[in-house]
Image (cartoon, rainbow, N blue to C red):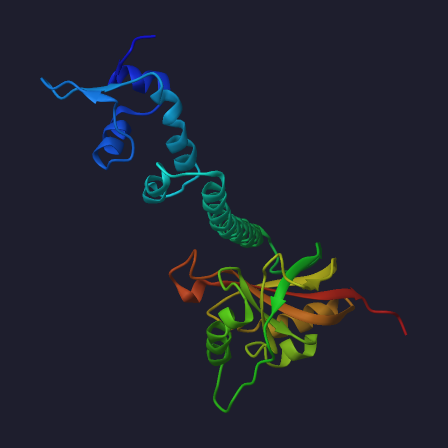
Length: 272
């Protein structure tokens, strides 16, 4: 190999972009072995192909160039292990954030597709099998005089960080009993974040599933339709009732067109 390599040659052998080599030289991180005094061209020695590996490996680990530069001339195993352990912790945090963002995307996508599927159905109420679904339950709601859905919901969102609840997931209403929903659908006993890592599990099974258009807490005549459907089909409702806005402000700008899903465990009523 030649005694010295031009910036083009060194770039080719090292796989480092010429613009990157020039930038590293400008900030004093990694400089050529010499410069031509006549034209100021950069020339690198073949040995620098090994020396630059220190910079490329650590920069690929997303370690700041400033940190790499501060230890390039006095590095040792102890200082390097401290540096990469610190970076490992940062990457662990970033990976958790990315995984959570991916999970939110996955859950949001599934919810919106569920809404699209529901709109294609001929009936807004049916009994269907639902898989187990995880979530995080918020604290019990307390409705003061004149308060509607939005007041406790605002309190729930305000406490979300403290309760470690991710409000980027779909947020739904949780009614302790079917009657609780049917009597006051816009006043859930709790709120629930459908975080798949949550400890609360909605059991798999057959559920009465119904849909309605409207803004938060507005269900129109859906409770009456559910009562009528239940009576006509001799169904018994049990367990908590869940309300989830599969279409919300994330995918619609008209609140009146939000789409809420109501589901509650259903079974055939036993003959007396």
